[in-house]
Image 1 (cartoon, rainbow, N blue to C red):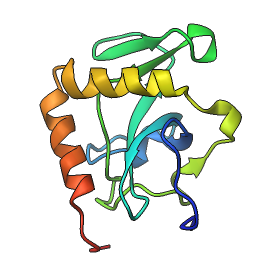
Image 2: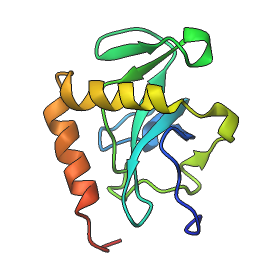
Image 3: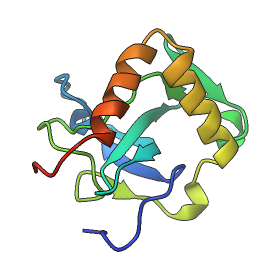
Length: 135
């Protein structure tokens, strides 16, 4: 595991839909997620990216020529209830795929304070920040 350095905010990871969050899905589709926060143990809070518009999604005009959207959901656990860390389920992408700091600020602002899911998202970040070693 990659403990020596922190995964920077804005770094994208590649995962599969079925590894994200507790909801059961059989989708094995590869999905990029963007890191919007982390804690001292390098456990990550991520927001899924999407190529389609829809409910609870916002366009990122400056990322990938405006063809990307982010979902208004923050995830801090994988499908098994473990913290999200860079591992075989969540592979770190090259830094040329990073989302800009300005876009990360926009994503954080939207998912935490200006979306229907804002309250749950803030709650998840609080859990992430206050986590003691339990894994």
